[in-house]
Length: 201
Ligand SMILES: Cc1cc2nc3c(=O)[nH]c(=O)nc-3n(C[C@H](O)[C@H](O)[C@H](O)COP(=O)(O)O)c2cc1C
Image 1: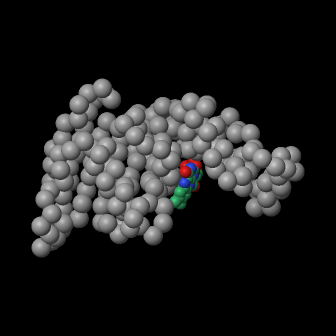
Image 2 (image 1 turned 45 degrees about the vertical axis):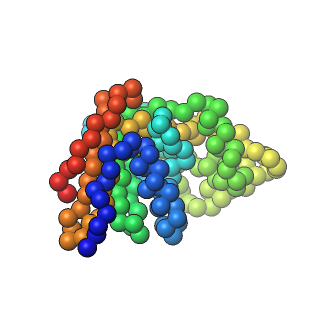
């Protein structure tokens, strides 16, 4: 029998920190991988994995190509949902809210913190657009390597990051006999204090 108490009524950012720390210690790889759901202006949802690259009380940050499919959806509808599922811990966190683009300085700093090969790979990619043959991409990578033989690659202006400011954060934890625990935290804007409730599983 699981004697752990129910998910505490704490600050959801503090709870995120605890669960994320445990995931980093137990997941075989990419504990920061999360599903990102966006929707087209017509309301068609789509979802894909991205990596969490920054988080704190101001929100949860990921980086991408703003001309990709997700980028177009985000430009048209600056709202998103994130989902972490840590299989080894049997835990899920769902986070929803509006997005803002990170500053140019923040995007530059993160872009240039990546290995040179990753900078080249993303600068050479027209993410989500049709690629006639893999060799076309490899040729673009080689052309950038020739053009910038050493040091950092300039960040393409469409390569940027977005910060989700949470309005809902829901923590789900597996419990025995499928009598799982869920706690939902909500607020209407980032200045408001969080309310929370348990939810039936
Ligand atoms: C574990 C994992 C992490 C990923 N991280 C990112 C990421 O941080 N940024 C990104 O643009 N794509 C990332 N991708 C690729 C996306 O899932 C997706 O293929 C790509 O961004 C294009 O999505 P879109 O066509 O919906 O724009 C990741 C894929 C996986 C499987």
